[in-house]
Length: 324
Image (tube, rainbow, N blue to C red; front, side, top):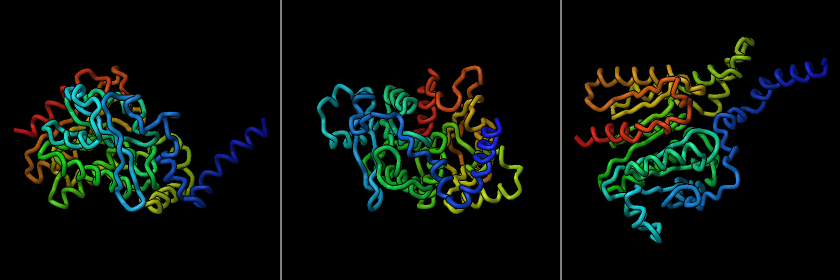
C-alpha cells in the first residue's frame, strides 16, 4: 500500500515539473494528433468508408501537405462512378453549397462520428471537404494554432476559387471551432468574409476549457501552477479564443450545442451566441444568427449531434437564408 501511495504521489508531483521542463508536452496533449484513430484505416481509400469520396493532398505551405476527402452530394453518386479527381474538382462549381469540415483534436478524418456527419450532409445535398490538419492523419508537418489556421484558410480559398459563386461554409467542431473562427477573422480582415460559420460544441477560449478540466482542477490549488499553465500555453503560442474572435466577426453564424456535453460545457456555446448577438447589434449587422440547443435527455453529448434527424433541415434553413 505504501508503495502504491508513494507511486501516485510521485506521478502527481511530476506533472508540474514535466510541464516546466518540456512545455511542448502541453501542445501535444491539446492536439492529441499522435492518436491516429481509427487504426488500420487507409486514408488514401475513403471509398472503403464513405461513398463517392475522392482523396487528395494540398501543399498548404512548403514541406506541409494535408490530406483532404471530397465527398459529393448524394444526387451525383451515379454520375461519379469511374470519374477522375479533376472531375470531382469541377463539381465544386455546380451550385451545391460546399462545407469545409474542420474536426476536433484526436484522430483523423476517418473517425466514426465525423464520417457519419459527412454522410448526412452528403445526403442533404452538400459537397463536404474533410481535412486532416498538419500532423494529423496522413498529413505532414507539426500542428500549431497558426498552422491549423493556415491549413483551413488555404483549403477554404482553394474551394472558393473553384466554387463559381456557390456558398462555402466553414464547419468547426470542438477544437475545430477555434480553427474556424481564426480563419474567419483573417478572411474578414482581407475583406473577403466567409460565407457562413457553423460551430458545433464550441468553447469560449481554450484557456477556460483547460481550467474547467477535471485533471487541471486537481492542481489549481497549488501555488504558481496556474501561472505555469498559462505561461506554457503562451510558449506554445496557443490561444484559440472564440470569444475574442466573435467580438469582431459579423458574418452568418449557426451554433450547435448539446446541454449534456461532457467535454465543452454548454454554457460556453451559449456565451458565444450572446457575444455574437451583441456584436451584430453594435455593428448593425443584419445576418442570420442562430443557436440550436439539444436537451440532455437526447444524449448527444459532445460528438453525436449528427444523430438529430432534423439536422439536415436545420442546416438547409440556415443556408437558405443566405441566398435571400
